[in-house]
Image 1 (cartoon, rainbow, N blue to C red):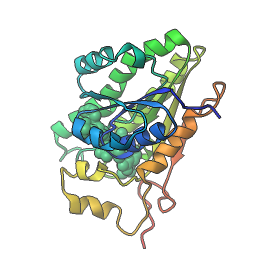
Image 2 (image 1 turned 45 degrees about the vertical axis):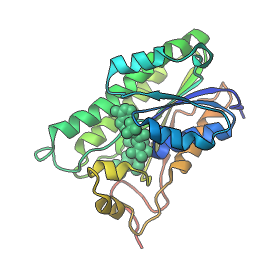
Image 3 (image 1 turned 30 degrees about the horizontal axis):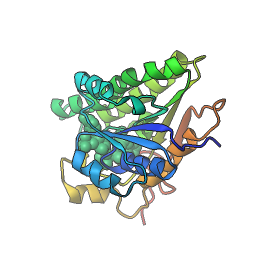
Image 4 (image 1 turned 90 degrees about the horizontal axis):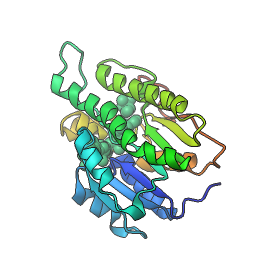
Length: 252
Ligand code: NDP
Ligand code: 8X3
């Protein structure tokens, strides 16, 4: 098992949910964590008990200038990023294409696909110079199966899967590794964001079933990150026991 002590890990979307749990677990393993998101106060709160003081970057991944500025602002002692966890992402709305809002589609495409690409493009060159590094993309079961009214969100996660697979070709022979992790239902702020703040509707998503936690996903991320350099975990599908597919969920 590879040790994570003093490894530098950049986690996007670290202010909540899966990203917050990734930041915490890497800190517990002795890594030096760079947390990126738009909400600095939330990141400060999450990092308040950290053993190693993290570096916090306020960044909207939808804006390439912002991403480039943030990555360039990283002090020299943090610059050699060993692991990038591309986690920032969201769903907005749940409706047919004919009823969908363009603003929702644009936010999802700009964040989940373009944002992931911008951060990757900003971080990858330094990894290639060092012939080592790991990029872990958080996709979704929605990147493998579509479901009614999931159209654009599912398309973005199919896009993440395609980008992960394409990157595996792009970096082949360089020592850089790319992992794609596709979780099923995880209880985070995800559904509250999807339903534009409707907490009751969000809570109903997980009613009568046991969803994954952010920690479950973070532990899987750490599994990928601790494999020895000759082992690359290309692809993981991680589901709650109660969930057989996007549409089949056992509820008590
Ligand atoms: P949360 O809503 O709890 O967290 C989303 C994170 O993404 C927040 O930290 C948010 O930070 C960040 N983010 C969103 N937009 C931007 C942006 N424009 N720029 C920078 N950061 C942004 O949801 P999850 O933890 O559940 O989601 C994390 C990832 O996991 C997403 O990619 C999601 O698609 C994926 N996923 C989630 C599943 C689930 O059921 N929850 C299942 C499968 C995959 P801030 O708002 O502060 O910028
Ligand atoms: C989140 C999982 O199935 O709720 O990516 O869209 S799902």
